[in-house]
Image (cartoon, rainbow, N blue to C red; front, top):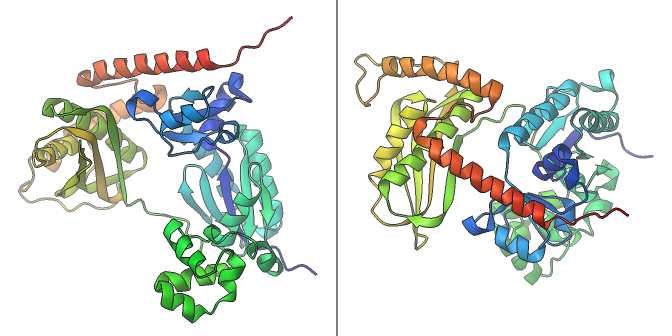
Length: 420
């Protein structure tokens, strides 16, 4: 007799960014598609279709290397607005079946079906319904793993990809885990795997067969953790709300940049994007940081904590420029900005008695906020590029022209179909 259906689901969209692009452009069906930056600008792959993965193309791979592996690769510039909208639809489907949803990213979440069975059936039935709803409502495919713990559920969702649906019951844990390579254990990276293999531990079953104290002595606290996972034991609960710790963006340049005016303009672009994202999430932050990487790969960071939190681009940009002035001169290959110490915009904010401590005051920011609210309304209706600061118009036009050239190059690489 099999054990009862477990209650933890892990839902993971298949090749999410690439799948959205293929869904929205049927001409891409069956082709090796990757979403990422251009090869001539130090671009990297953000997502690859399974057709592209067959050539060895993977996320985080330099685009130049991806094109070497797959010369016919169709490269598509990322469109995070569309991916975010699709993610919202997917998360709405999850919430339909249980309030216990823990998003991990735009395309991945844990769900706990405890308490939902009377309404929708057991976790297996709920998982199948979620799969059907997502496909019907978004045209996208999700792989689902169901198991007694988070670790096992995530493992299950990956076992039969793409379009997977895998259940691991209590009485199946050893059968599933034992033959897997030890690298499948969450927390076992390349270095730990090499150390384990030096001890004769090749599979999860090998690790599970060892003494827990021996593993803990050899690997410290992480040893106890990986040993417990090898036995399928994972005490972590599904946490519906994952507080975002920080939000930011960075860019690696095609060529190193020394001109501080150009760097300030880039920071302005970054700060406008980051601030808009914070406002759409209902967040504001108190700490602004910049990250700068020099031509020789030396990386420095500078941070400032404001006297009150903000989500306004001009405010963040002014602080970021002050931080840039504290970075030693020299050509930069990467620059980034982030905002942390985030809080909900509905949280009460302590007023400053005299508006001291920062170049801006809440009263001044209030005037900016009123104007920003109107601009945000237009962006939500017509897209975030519908209203652009004048100083960024030339950069936006250049970026669009570059994207059009990349699209034309990708189109030229597509195989032609000839009809008799």
